[in-house]
Amino acid sequence: MIEVSDKASEKIAEILLSANIRNPFLRVGVDEGGCSGLSYTLVVDEQQAEEDIVLNKKDFSILVHPNSIPYIDGLEIDYEESGMVGGFTMNNPNAKASCGCGASFRMANYRGEIKKCD
Image 1 (cartoon, rainbow, N blue to C red):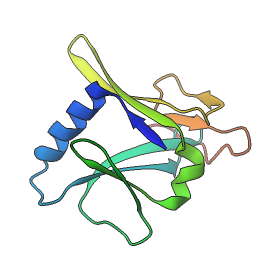
Image 2 (spheres, helix red, strand yellow; image 1 turned 135 degrees about the vertical axis):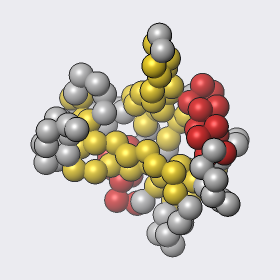
Image 3 (spheres, rainbow, N blue to C red; image 1 turned 90 degrees about the horizontal axis):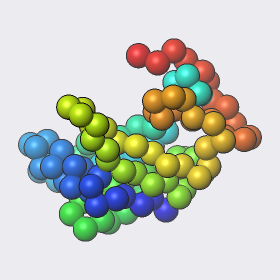
Image 4 (tube, rainbow, N blue to C red; image 1 turned 180 degrees about the horizontal axis):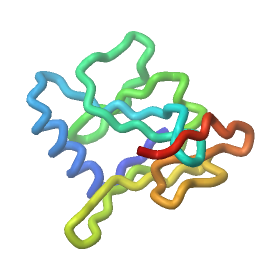
């Protein structure tokens, strides 16, 4: 459902460890917005809802709300460093178009609500 590269896994585990909460998860999802209409969300969460899908990885677990599955099924998360900056990259087989920074996308059958990026 969601693949995470070794480099991204290391970074995610580091972020979750530094979160200073007892049982942190990485919540992956999709929100309306961004210059392409749909934006990825990656947040540290400690609240698991009953309907959440739990994906257990080697050093951490990912929570996904079922409503996000059609948008991110097959998503590959990587982490790239360039000079003094780094960030997560998303390779989404469901995306038919993405913005230049890769933070938002649209699908063939749903564009989402386009909003200016922050």
